[in-house]
Length: 191
Image 1: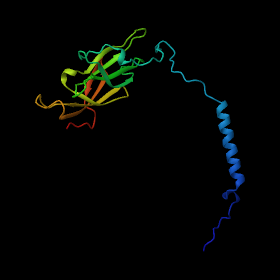
Image 2: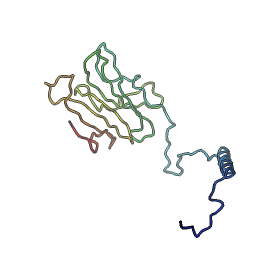
Image 3: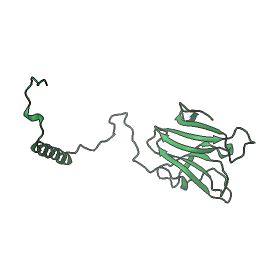
Image 4: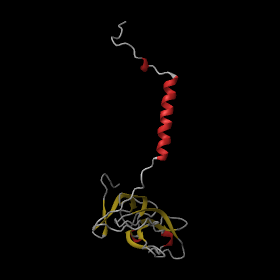
């Protein structure tokens, strides 16, 4: 057995007193951090190019909007919704997936973007992303980084029964030049 040329150091072996000292030091750091808090962060800009950003507001509630879907005596059902600032104005919009609340079958979806002006009593629809007349169903809905993505189920022909959509597409919408532009997200495949 070969012995080390370096003598053993006393501090390389932990003793209970080392653990007590470490715990005491850590408790002191935690206690000090409770008293030393940074100033509140602000995103205010200064100078002539400063813009007034509206205070945080609640996203529009699709249940309070007049949605452009015809259901007759049947109620409108909100299946999915997601909110975020889609157009960069500092105010949240809501994307709602809705359909008629039929007892059976697969009623088509409508996908609407809603906004609500400051002081307005109810939200209004500013865009229709999926029209119920197109006979499409929305399986998933995601809103991330001001982009809306959805899995949309449809039909290859009018002969395909409503129960069994045979087209599966991924769609993405983003606000560009004053309108929502539809594209296919990277890596999306149709079935």
